[in-house]
Image (cartoon, rainbow, N blue to C red; front, top):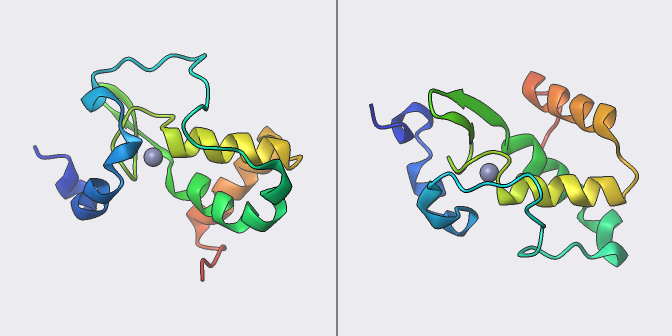
Length: 113
Ligand SMILES: [Zn+2]
């Protein structure tokens, strides 16, 4: 089954294909540094809404082959999720805060404008 059809986001996924590494060959490492997207500490507060949105939409989905990003279908945690997580961490958010953010987004409490 073509997995893109599950979400209808194939076009979006193509546009953000830079989020994928090595064609998704499964080389994700836990210690993979967030070296490809900058974390600008001066702008953490300004970027916070964007970052929250990134984290809220780049959520894991359980597939037979493992966890994949719902948004870009790469191995999860994908690059954007890890970037968002990193920025939130620098902004003083911790796991319970991030979990709450995700929960609220799932419930539709958050409005992205
Ligand atoms: Zn993603």
